Length: 264
Ligand code: NI
Image (cartoon, rainbow, N blue to C red; front, side, top):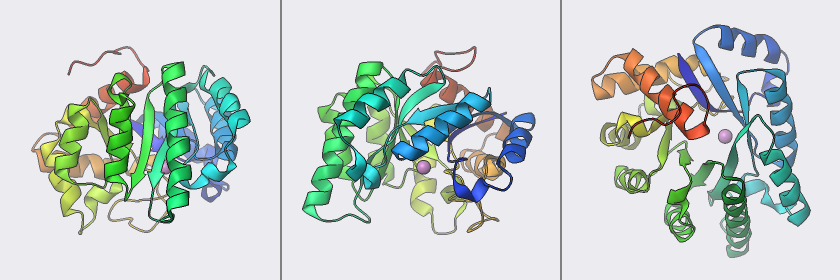
């Protein structure tokens, strides 16, 4: 069974078949799904999905590119949602300098990243981190926040294997998805080789990042099979081992399931 740690099933690309798709996934090879908020609106729709399905859980938070909408009232509201029984993480939060390169934009992202990290600490929840073209600043903020005290997932990991080792040393987990199957993803495959399996989580970022042979198409958790197969091939282990270990990793991080407290 596969634990999907990062999907956006509230996305409009699932409007025509959302319920059927989620039911099929959960009656098949997918045991649990964390649906991830990226704005105030998608935090609401994420929570609605989590309320509807037993094995769908919510991450609540605002993506760096959406932080313009944030203020202290919304932070207070997010804190309430963090206490919802189906909320298992704060996320996705972080830094994204790909689209926003101006100093002022970076400052705004940094402010709300720190503010939401603080919130995660207050409610004792793990954090799902979105970090793109902002490796050094992300690392520096996480160190400054002693984020090693709370489990963090570096979602859709895109930096160097060396940086991954540093994150792992801090106790963090590395989110691996469809990109690992792409022809040009040498760096990520090297990262997977170097990071122990008990620090890797499987994630789609659906509807984005579909693995080969579906690259460019709409993604869904069923396609994690291709990601698990690629990781198994790289590590020279059975695909069942990849599914089992990453599932237990996710259960430990998000506090779900019977075997909470995975050995390191
Ligand atoms: Ni995402």
